[in-house]
Each structure stands twice: as C-alpha cells, then as structure tokens.
Length: 628
Ligand SMILES: NC(=O)c1ccc[n+]([C@@H]2O[C@H](COP(=O)([O-])OP(=O)(O)OC[C@H]3O[C@@H](n4cnc5c(N)ncnc54)[C@H](O)[C@@H]3O)[C@@H](O)[C@H]2O)c1
Ligand SMILES: O=C(O)[C@H](O)COP(=O)(O)O
Image (tube, rainbow, N blue to C red):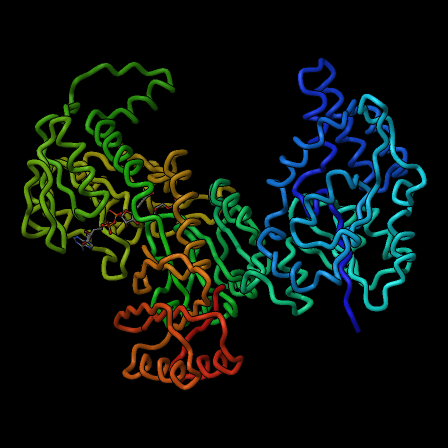
C-alpha cells in the first residue's frame, strides 16, 4: 500500500506563522503595529485550536494585515530562513518521495509555493488559498471559492484528490486533525517542533517532535541516525535552567527533578533513560547501572564524580562527564571568606549582636596576613586558593599525594603530618575517592597547632566528625568551616542532622561551595556541551572514565562507534569485517584505557545491513552505535 504524506505549512514546514511574519513587514512603522500583531497571533491560535471558525479567523487576520503585493518578496525571503530544522535536513525525503508528498495549507499560495518547491515539492502537489488584490496591489481578501478558505477545507481537498493508499497527515493545527476526523487519513501526527498545542496533541495518533520522528516510525531513511526526541534525559538535583534549556533545544526529551533520588527510586527512574544528569548527592551505584537499560552518558553537573561507580559505568559502556573547573573559583572565594570570618570569630559575634549583646574586643581576633595556610590537595581548587591567598598576604604551604608544581611562592611539604604541624589554617581540597575516607581523625587533629583554623569544603567523608567535634570542644580547633558532610539531606525540605550543630565559631554551610550563579551557569553550559558532543559525534574529551578522543565533524560518511573490553585482537576483527565487505574506511580513531577500547570508524555511506550485525556480534563488544 502506498503512503501519502500530507504536510501543513505554517508552524510545521516552517517555524513560524507566515501571516505573523507578513504582519511584521506590512505594519512596519504603523502606530497600530503592536496591537494588530498581538491580535493576529491570538486569532491564529484560536483558529488552530479549533476555538473559532477557520474562515472567521482568516478574514479577521487579513483585515488587520493591511498587506500589499509589494510585501511578498520580503516575506518569501524571510520564510526561506524559517524552514523547520528537521525539514531542512531531510531534503532527501522530499527528493525520494516527491510523488507522495502534498502540502495542503490554509495559508496563501503566493508565498507557500516558492518555499516548498525549493524543498522539492511538486507544484501540482501544493494546495493553498489565494489572495485577492485591488489595482494598487493592496490585499482586499481571498478567493472565497477556494475550498481551503472554508472550515473543513483540507478534508475537501483530500477527498477530491482521491489518493489510493494510506494517508498520513503531519501538522500542528486542529484543521490538520480534521482530515483524520473526517475519516480521510490513516494517521495524524501532531508536529511539535515549533509549537505544541495541547488540544491538538490530545487528538493525535502520534506526537512528532520532528520530521525525523515521522520518518523513523515509518521506517523511512532520515538524515539522522536516531530521532533526538527518543533520547530521554533525566536531570536531578536542580540542574541550572541553562543546562535544561540546552538539552531541550537539542531536541532531547528532558525530565527535570529538583532533588536527589535514593538508590531504589533511581533504579526505577533510570529505565529507558539515555542521559542522566546529577550533582554531588545522587549515588549512581552498581545496582543503578544494572537497571540502566539504555544509559549512554552521565553528566555530573559538578566537579566530584566519587558519587558515581565509574567502573560499573565503564563496564557497561556509559561515558561520564563532569565540569572539572566551572565552580573552582566559587569554592576558593568561600574558603577565603570563611578563613577571614573564622580568624576574627565573626559568626559568634554576629549571633551575639542578634541577641542584643555588644562584645567589642580584639581578643582572639587576628589578621590573615602572614599566617601559614596549609592546603591539603593541590588540585584545581587547592592551587587556585594558593594564588589568591598569597595575593592577600598569606604564607602558603601545600601537600598533595601527587607531584604538583608550586604556584607563586607556595612551599611544597613532603607529608601531610609536616603540613599539619606547620599550618595556622588547614584547608582540605582532596578529591572524594574512597581511600580518602577519614584522612583527618583524632591523630591528625592532635598534630595540628593549638588554636588552628580548620576547613573542609571537599567531601564529607574525609573528616572523622566526632574527632572534629572533640577538637573544637577542647579548643584545639579555634574555628572551623564545614561545607560538606558525610550525610547530607536529599533536598531542602529534609532536616539537617549533625553533631557539629551548635558548636562555637563553627561555620556550617549546606554544600554551597560551588553554588553561585556564575558557577551554575558555567556548569549548565559546560556539561551539556560535552554530552551533546558525545551523542552527536562520539567525542569523549573531558570524559572521566572513557579514553579521551576529539573527533572531527562527520561529513558525508557513516560513523561506527564501537566500545569493547580492552582485550587483544578486537581492532583486527573490526577491520577484517570491513575488508570482507569491501568497505572503504574514510577515517579511523582508536584509544584505549586499562579496561575499554574505543574505536571510531568513518566509512563510505554504502554498506550492507549485515555488517552492523557482525560488528555488534564481535566478542567483548560492550556497546555499538552508528551515527550519520
Ligand atoms: N564544596 C563544594 O561545593 C565543592 C565544589 C567543588 C568541588 N568540591 C570538592 O573539592 C575537592 C577538590 O576539587 P578539585 O577540583 O580541586 O579536585 P582535583 O581533582 O583537581 O584536586 C584534588 C587533589 O587532591 C589530591 N589528593 C587526593 N587525595 C589526596 C590525599 N589523600 N592527600 C593529598 N592530596 C590528595 C589529588 O592528587 C589532587 O591534586 C573535590 O573533592 C571536589 O569534589 C567541593
Ligand atoms: O563536586 C562539586 O562540584 C561540589 O561538591 C558541588 O556539588 P553540587 O553541585 O552538588 O553543589
């Protein structure tokens, strides 16, 4: 049975309503422009939702337009840039199926024809209204005999066409659904790439966020390997709206959740999800990964990735990305600010003031100038803090488990013990690996100077909290700032429990070291960009668990992405298959780490179907996908 595609024009084939665009041209410079444009939009929506008769909507809009023939070339030019993105990329569909595609619109032929014929639609497959002009070229109305100027006109046109085959209607308006309602179409696809109308979507057989989706469900070759709307994204823990918007604009189906989820909840939620976005709270455990049946990538919208079982992800071919330095500066500023507040006992003084007590005294208050700052963990945050602290006069010492270049005049110390004995202020900036659990216990506090200032803005589990409490009570620690806790509430609605509550000169902050507008915007841009690069091109730059490969843009080729266990002979097997099938390799890229191999092969477009199956079937294959 032949399939015919009936495609609407305004807001489906183009991103805009052409009459809105015409209004902005024809009313340019006129005082009534803003009001008339708003009214035209309102009338369009009422008509498209089926809330007023189409003919009334058309008449009223034309009256408001005050259009003239001379406005049309400008309109056509503007419309050329407004062809819907998924239609632009699927010109091959128009070329291959030109005898099966009809554009039927209640708009006007005068501007529709030049746009859709340039896509490859046949002139005699275009049905639309026609404008009527006076002798000065002013639009005075429309051809009232044209069936498309009447309610139910689209159905009438299709009936007259008497097409022998299945009829699939793609449109955003109620008037498109009416074709199906009249019993003239087999399926109605509510097209939502540009506008989503609830009332129309309710009636649809299928919601199509892009033309690719229609082609995909009809098993017609599309310009992209997989419709983006089928890629489900779950974003937890209040990821910044910038990140949400970027992923939505990419066409993914994004679900947002404000808090973290516990293991069991996530095991349920993760099913069917292709991209997971989290922050520091959500534990992505082995069990979660076992339940993740479609997961391709995880974005940690933060620095730390200790909350993710990276090995389990690797074993399942799930790439993990983070934002390694987007909030570094924010943590540094909070650390420095806290040091000043603590060394002057500001918080306790402020609390007294709020209780009406005036305690003016210099006793126990000091400057930070010349004090010895001891940084444990001289990574991105530790090193930046070193520079900033030195610039306001602190004497910086650091200890890192790895060899690190001293910045400015900072002094490298050979052991943590030596650093603890030296520093007036000890600040922790180590990463959250399991081995760092309780690296600061009673023993380490005992090594510190009496009256030390202590900060932890790294991870909660690195400090033994009862030992810290004892050190504060004994005045070994004169002040501390703690931003991270072994157990943190799941959301802002859950209570905060800690032994540290109520202790003197103790600044407790709710894990906000990286929570500034600037940092969250940076992260909201950085992580989606890495994820989209990975999904669209296979690029793994900045992945924390995948071999890092920066890949060129894919041009006129198919990209085969093969993730496998790093065992000998896989590349040979892949290339053997290409040779057997006489496939021309355009480019090949390979990188391995201890556990996995990542091979990308760009090949000529033509390849037999069984090649894909053979590649998937190679022993030790973890994941395989094709991009084009
Ligand atoms: N409070 C917040 O909101 C917040 C924000 C951002 C980052 N963080 C946390 O801050 C920490 C530091 O972040 P970063 O970006 O600088 O990380 P990083 O990976 O750049 O630096 C960590 C450094 O610690 C060193 N290190 C690890 N274990 C050590 C140990 N036992 N002794 C000495 N050195 C050790 C590493 O060699 C590395 O140089 C991380 O735990 C991160 O999760 C917290
Ligand atoms: O790892 C980080 O970047 C910090 O711990 C911040 O985490 P958050 O995004 O959960 O605040």
